[in-house]
Length: 133
Length: 137
Image 1 (spheres, rainbow over the protein chains, first blue to last red):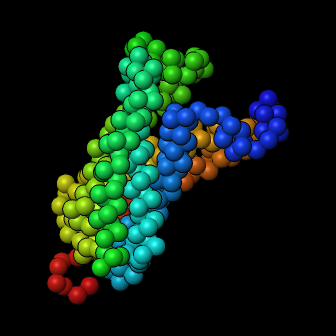
Image 2: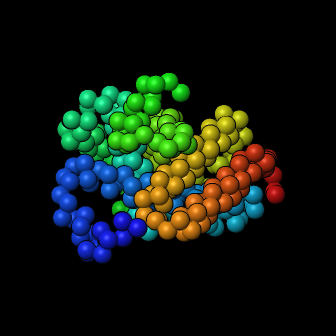
């Protein structure tokens, strides 16, 4: 129960903000949050695909989930989460198998961000475009 | 499992694992991660950029699943994505749940969810028969 005493000293959120781990900390946090988010979506997605078995009417009526304006905004979060998780995961795998690269993790995170931004913005733009027409 | 792989794992964790399960879980995350870099990223970009969300409906999915290639693709995407996600969830549970009883309960619940969603996902992919286009179902 040693871990309990750590939490008693204050909120883990505040402790996290005080930690100032910079790039590595934010990459770790985003990786964890995006992983859980994508898993949550995956479970929903398996369920909606399962409804294919109930016929076209039921399946198509459920697609309001993804075609509505709020569905599209949620989709942009999914695109953000999956693309970030994929690129950051690729960085972690590369670093794990070439451990010398761990020294350059901050630089690699910025390279990763430079690849992430254009791909994310383009995919998000295509997904949100029908809202502006 | 050769020694280099174990070295890579130990360097990452800073301690030796008590059994082989954690080593395999760690290695599985890397292997399935590489696989999903292809399967999941392609699926996301293809469905949102090439097909686009507006065009997805029952008819389109049926048409896709007429092709055994997409059925196989979707089956492996389901298998790898859910296994990778649930192995990751197991890691997160280990980080935040310290009480041994709650830990066993949480991991058990995650495993039940894994079997359930893998089951209904595999069931629909393997048993779905696309209706003939134009025919009234």
